[in-house]
Amino acid sequence: MFNIQNYSKQNIKNDVLSGALVAVALVPEAIAFSFIAGVSPVVGLYGAFIIGLITALIGGKPGMISGATGAVAVVFVGLGLSVSQMYPDLDKEALSMMILNYILLTSIIAGLIQISIGLLKMGKFIRLVPQPALFGFVNGLAIVIALAQLPFLAPKDMGQYNSWVEIIGASFTENYIMYILILITMATMHFLPKVSKAAPAGLVAIVILTLVIFFTGIDTKVVGDLADLSNVSMPSFVLPVAELFSFSSMAVILPTALIIALVGLIESLLTLSVLDEMGGERGSGNKECIALGVGNATSGFFGGMAGCAMIGQSIINFTSGGLGRLSSFTAAVLLIILVVSFSSVIAVIPIAVLVGIMFMVSIGTFEFSSLKRIMHMPRSDAFVLIVVTIITVLEDLAVAVIAGIIISALVFAWKHAKIFASTHIDEKGRKIYELDGPLFFASVTSFNEQFDIVNDPEVVIIDFKDARVMDSSGAEAIDGITEKYKKAGKKLSLRHLSEDCKKTLTSAGPFCTYEEDDPTYKVAHNV
Image (tube, rainbow, N blue to C red; front, side, top):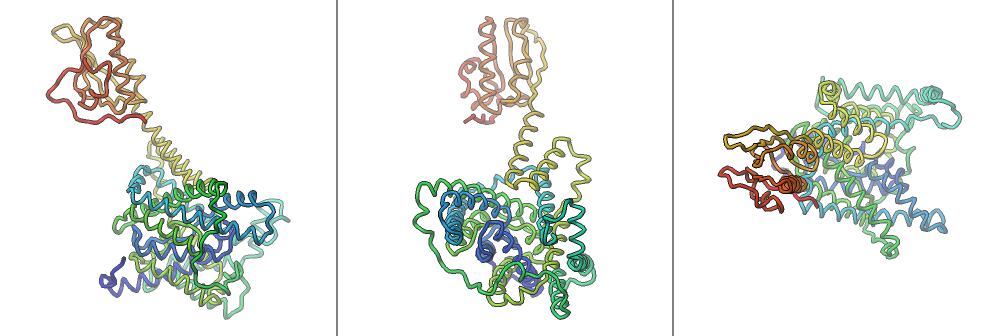
């Protein structure tokens, strides 16, 4: 919870103004993501308000903005298709209500899963995401943010055009005013902060251009064209219908809830990492898991859809000076006030201004420095960066991050899949194998290739002083080589193994010699 006594007047002003800018920018996003999920815009707006409010108060990163997002909305599309197949006899209105009930219960369960993950302190596993994958996530998301604005610029009848060239030409012909407004907005956001930082440049662009469009009567798309917000009321408590607690319904809801929980946490924790990199105090991943879970569960009970952190709005808030909890609190509260009490004002805001703001967010989000670094990165890291970027754009954030982790892990295993041995004969005629490198599942083959059992003398010593046994596969390899020397009738001794490793060994255990400087590492056991 924020303490207003810790705020200076300047901080209060910055947080309130940046929160106001974010609140306006949240409206079309929440509406658009509701359409993606196939529900009323009110569902997305309620979700943006409730999730944003709760994460503002108890989240792990002050100033981070959460609400209804495209990453989660896309998962709800699949849920809607499954519900449609389960209830083929329902009319359109009844089916929409049934889909909504499924979404609400799924949001509640997803929230409970996220709370559990936070309580188990599993948020720290975001550290497993390597830096190249983080760059790929940021770059891919920047591209996704920009691409998400293109539907607003599409010509009215896409079907009558035969190529993208014709579509782009028609877009300029129909929406040239929007293009002009977008450029003015982007120029305002770029140049105004160099002159004055008294107010967020995005908010200045919204106020001035909205007034110009309203009083001049210039014909351009406005927020009111997206949806009718005239009858939006404050959210009220609702319970999921009892029919959803059947086996067949749960078979659809539970897997979807798990996916939403994981997608939401991955996007939120990665957004937290991005904001940490941009500066300020380091956030708490586990607190964010719990806050997001509470927000999603509460949203489901009050008619809202699940969501997660919104990197675009979070960066708008951060770069506009909103670094405290008051900024995200202001954004959430002002959002619901605007759509409930001032919907007529929101309705006249030009879409082009909001598109221009999001284009600038996209530019600010993209890690242009990664383009320079990619030439000097190891090829494996560059490959991870490119793959994660492409998958984020074409497929899904969660899939992209998981793919990045898997590829990085495989590359790491491949790089360390070699173990080397230097050999010499001591004064007693014994052959000493001095190993160097990690012994684990990937290096077992290399380990076995080091030994010349047939030609070795009667007494052999394997020294693990500069090697480390990483897992049970390594221990099994030691057992295996011990058995081979035993069958050859030769005496084998093992030096410098940790006590934990010695306990893991079965065949080789009796052949371990005691050394004063034996290491103390633990051996990971395969499950």
